[in-house]
Image (cartoon, rainbow over all chains, first blue to last red; front, side):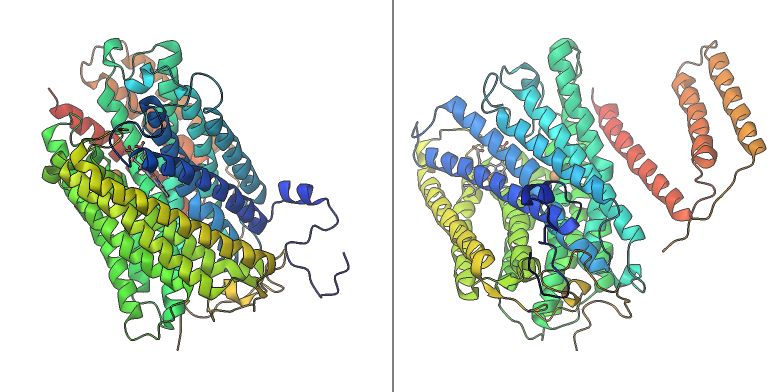
Length: 532
Length: 95
Ligand code: HEM
Ligand SMILES: [Cu+2]
């Protein structure tokens, strides 16, 4: 390399062959990029499966695939999107890329463990995808693996479940790493309440990863034990209890939805003040709300089991507790709005995605209250209303926050800038397509169309056609966005170190940063976001 | 950065804890001779919890480390306990 610059950025392979330099790296930024590229691939596979399902549902009767294939499609779509995209999602990619930068540190606390997490992720992912190719066909249980069906079906459930088990370890180790990093690696002067809110969000998330994931790991192993050894844990025929499975599964999987959404909220809390040129409103309230959501989130899992034969008093208590989570979530939304009030708002792509997040998350959150209420859920459980609801939260919420983070930190990571005009257009296409795709699902659910079927009655056709057309617009928007991003990486204009005039530490270093992040470890003297 | 200060626990303390643990083990075995009905599990778990606490405090140095670590362990315990309580709350009302 003939580099005449004073210091080289973190893309420099230091004389090693590229594959080796990348696959053995312990640099948090490189590991973040490894996650970024692998997550993108799996996300696109998941989108493809979703597209096939929507195609099948364009009219009643068989259009594209058989019923059994459809069962495999929604299971793999769910497993991929949940375990390979939204759960690792923002922490693994943008947490890794930016947490040390935000804290003024040189790396995470355990760089080698960080690389191990990525290898576990890849191992789990390969196992999940190979259920397609080997054995008796992809699992057909839905991503929830409900017993006793998951114990009895002849499909490849054991393998899928083991892959989720391995992915769980990856998640736990990342959580452990970030917790230690936040406790031990903050730069001088960075007290807890001078930490950027994204770091706060990752902190709350890491606790959930650490404390909730082991529960699902053990539960999934119990399924394998029951399948292989015939020990009666969940199957009533063998003396087991299927409702116990649902308890154990949702003890993890409800907190897991906060693993998905909290980091997204953290990203939004970074973007809103930067593009409003305003100090964030209610810094402490947002920080505490993250912790409150994480904590209350442990005690609401029963809302997935209202119709599953849970006892009456338990149902009422879980419904009441569920409503409590709405409070800290609403606190955040109001604080973002108050931050924007009277600000000079700049509608660049990161801000557009952030506003898109708020809008879509609002629909997702409010429709969540509808299914969180005991009485209405009895009508809506297992209908398309639920499918609409969770896509608004997971795709409209976490997905859009992921895209917001990508457009926000893009110049920092790649040292270049994407084409703003085209990125803006891609946003509007994606945003429109999204609502055309998922809003009809909410309507279909209220009309009574059940989820997880490859067929439906003729009276449901019109909203289904609209939704399928929406899936095409959505995919067009995604492709447009990806083209803009790829072009930006390849030959976008060189970006300045701080193109958005951000005040957090990540913007006070080079773009792309050097291997060590900072020449001199910074000292912090005030809170973040002190825009004047 | 937080400085690591070495905390040397006296041999004697460790031996006392060891004797306490051994005694508690003997108690567990001895108690199992009696039929305590509903209390059987409570007593066994109670003694085990005391033992675990001793190990955490002395052998794993929680007593000598910064308070924040103790708080973390307690939060974890509380979450774990609540999960069990909520699950069994449902069961207690099912016929
Ligand atoms: C263009 C993108 C997408 C399309 C067209 C799509 C379509 C669908 C459809 C039609 C279903 C319902 C299947 C059924 O119940 O019969 C479904 C289920 C599901 N989707 Fe998506 N989806 C997309 C993106 C996403 C994303 C980004 C996520 C997560 C972040 C996601 C997570 C899920 C999950 C968890 C299920 C439930 C699977 C199950 O029932 O076990 N989807 N999707
Ligand atoms: Cu839930």
